[in-house]
Length: 106
Image (spheres, rainbow, N blue to C red):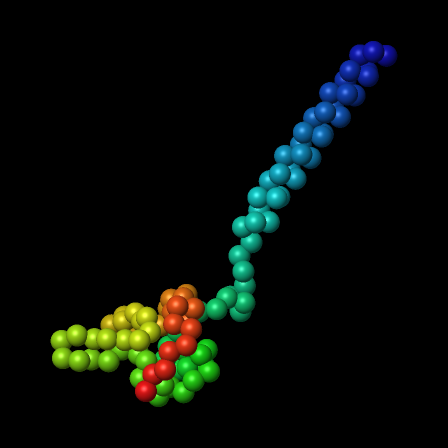
């Protein structure tokens, strides 16, 4: 009788250990779930996407964007140039908006 109780308690302990390990491994997998691409927002915006994001015209984006002045290029807003295409990083634009708050550009 005593041997069967000991054997039953060892089996019960083993089952509890397996269930605990399974629960822990599932909790790690839940944190690594990838967000569907439809919910993700682009990190680099084109000129038209930036105009739509800011709620201004593309002409206004051109005034704020990179302007060539001889050998140097100046810009009111942050940008990245890849090849001949200009992109605007979303996080940098958000940071720029919080820094500038209210600036009058003519």
